[in-house]
Image 1 (cartoon, rainbow, N blue to C red):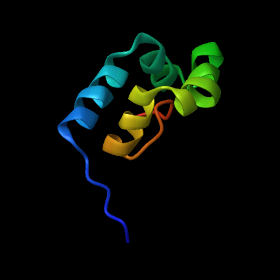
Image 2: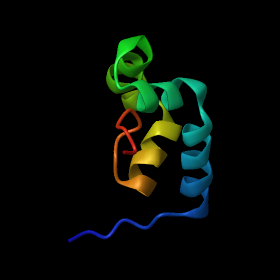
Image 3: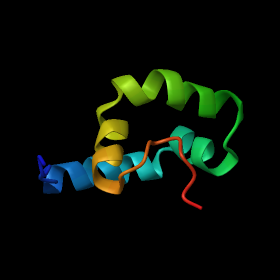
Length: 65
């Protein structure tokens, strides 16, 4: 298997995604415009959302529960 190395830069970028108002709302609510935006648009384009996925192992819109 290819083990992916997580760098300090990835962790910093993932932290910005964790603090992002739009992504936080999408994770908290699990529905609505912010959820749709992060799931279908931002998740594929935003480097912070991509870093969040690499570091935490889940998509930026998925609930932490």
